[in-house]
Image (cartoon, rainbow, N blue to C red; front, side, top):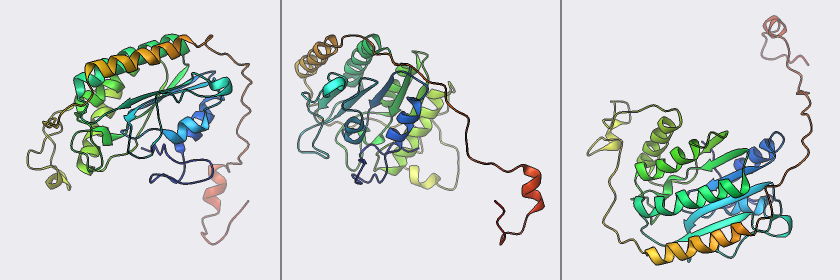
Length: 273
């Protein structure tokens, strides 16, 4: 699934040794003028933000726990620099946010981003550590609330790449990405889990969906609305949706031998170039 959003150009970080998201976006930029990156992992997507902090061709939007929490970045005031000023959006959150509150901020923020930035492609990092009950997390989202982010972005009809991310209650990570794959391909799946070799790990209820806990949502409506207002003010500073002269992509230059040639040389100890 990938989604290793903490890795930097010169160092590994946060269990991430290479940043597949950055590499994917760089490839997308060969074909698309503007790419939107959205991160719903509980941790700030610092590695991706840093990689595109000074460009206006990639907008990064991260909804994350902020404060005394890894990686310690993603302040509301972090907005990008140089050509990339106002192209980084950070929504710092407090403990306990639930499905209803998350949807109230996600939909209007992303809607405004789509109108202002007009991306040609979207990358969504679906970190499952923002789910309720995660061993390292402190949010209170269910699969349905998390999956609504996938469904909402999908409705825009723009090329959408889904990647994984964090998640430390493994059975719920499996549940989450199974469910969100079904959302992505417009297929309903049963709440009853089918029997398999790992069935025992999903007890005691053996269901796909999970229930939220009774933890307190420390994100007051006033706090969320004020934060959204600040983000909307930043988006109004965008001069226009940037464009760039696209160049044709040359064909692959990697030599791929014909199938017949491969069949003629089946000795594994001999290499033909």
